[in-house]
Length: 215
Ligand SMILES: [Zn+2]
Picture 1 (cartoon, rainbow, N blue to C red):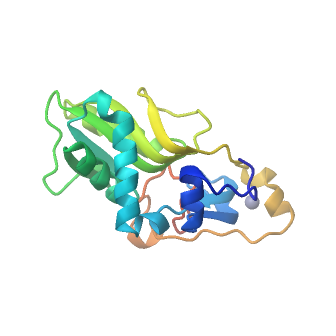
Picture 2 (spheres, protein in one colour):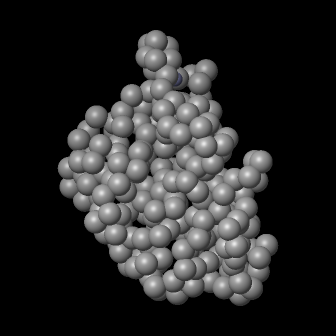
Picture 3 (tube, rainbow, N blue to C red):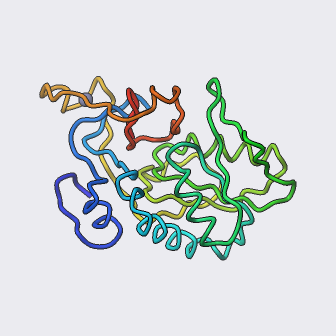
């Protein structure tokens, strides 16, 4: 999808109607720049929409028979909750502590448990790969991954298939070859990442805003 080409149907249209598809000049977590980022919080703030997202993702992964849904805080927390609710399983989240993704709060993955990875936006899949490693270290068996938006360009660093409600093929530019920089368009890095903790909402973000790191 080219930025600026308005899509008003399906899940992309739904995201757009909630203002979740932002256009401009954004710094991604990877350090690259993009003319688009996805702010799923703007659709997830509506509980009915969040529940619908959960049901839609659950329908696509139910055949994997997951027993627990796990995603990286902060961006995935609501999505995990709603997917888990729709599946009738536990939903837990991992948090970045001093740069490392960890399960806190007494959350556990049991040995042999079938784990579904959940994310809101997948760009490089870096966060999900970390969560997958965490689950595997606990003895869990990662059976699949689900995200609202996949903007990974198929370059996902995961061993399991990813299902997404929206797949976006968006341009991503290295900062030294960014046409938006060349045109002097101010670089935007909105969001909460630095306020929370570096990386707290996932380094795979690519399209989500985080102060100094947007995806
Ligand atoms: Zn740029």
